[in-house]
Image 1 (cartoon, rainbow, N blue to C red):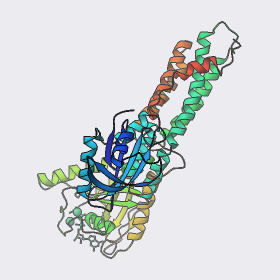
Image 2 (image 1 turned 45 degrees about the vertical axis):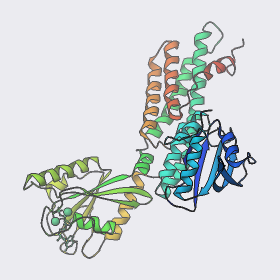
Image 3 (image 1 turned 30 degrees about the vertical axis):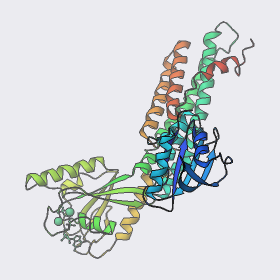
Image 4 (image 1 turned 180 degrees about the horizontal axis):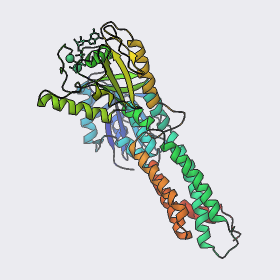
Length: 431
Ligand SMILES: Nc1nc2c(ncn2[C@@H]2O[C@H](COP(=O)(O)OP(=O)(O)OP(=O)(O)O)[C@@H](O)[C@H]2O)c(=O)[nH]1
Ligand SMILES: [K+]
Ligand SMILES: [Mg+2]
């Protein structure tokens, strides 16, 4: 157990109640000193907190002995009156008694180090605190409750068994082992590899739900891009004018579409720029087009479609014919709208929601929510890919061991050592 730390767990500023959390070796004495005596464990007790004869506050105190606490250490909660002076007096006393302010995430770090949760669950808790939408909340909660860790544990167990069998082949080559063991191991590893690859091939849905989806509005000058941004976001975010080339900087608004956080970016009209500032605007617009998860291509229904915007057509594009009140030039697959009259805007919104839901969001199963999950799993798949090539049993075992190590990076638990137990335990070789 490490030394005592404390942190304000509730929000900063004046409030009815301020929640101070404490954790670490020495919390027991600390609470006993402040309260005069140690309260009963795990029961809310109203106590006068005093230090060196000075009454600090009347507080609700929870004494939470380890290892059954959040961090696994001796812990306590002080529910104080939420004024800044109360907080200052109590923290001063805590420091005088040997505690120090916690670093960001330190409670959860200790929980991980004490085996109370794996890395993915810790990340899930961080995501839960950051969650802005219902879908984000549910995804984070699933991960915090060990959804991804369970998937990992099941794979790791199977991989460990394969490794044990392969190792046994090395140790007991002369013995009476099935001769087709290599084939069996390769087949089972192949199945495992496909399951991992399937999770990798989900298009990054979970990551996008966590980070948000980027939608870029693109089109010729005066097509009505800024007008549509304002209509969709319900506020006057971008300047609209009859002059072509009004927008130069990228104007972003945050929206929530089908539970997915979205950054909608209005960009400069695409054309041969009249000056260097506009040229920079066009360059930025094209960069956004490149990086976007979805391109909303805006044409004006009273003009022929322009080549620059047409060149951005593709599977990631949603085509819009704006100014439907002024003309009806046919544009294949376009949604007809008018930022002026409001015609078609509901349909446009619905199509954007459909597109957001298709690209990001909550799947049926626990998913990879961070690049590091993807990297670990990709590594594991690559090691399994090398298995059939590695002819020597030692090399095959090494490939399996490395796949297991890569997988273990997901949860931060390396259990290669279990293999030895398995070789001499579960795997029966009659010795
Ligand atoms: N009649 C009509 N006018 C529109 C419509 N949408 C936009 N406009 C007008 O078209 C002009 C250009 O609109 P903007 O929204 O500034 O167009 P933009 O594509 O952002 O233009 P740039 O930023 O210059 O590339 C403005 O005068 C708008 O009022 C529409 O649906 N119908
Ligand atoms: K304009
Ligand atoms: Mg504009």
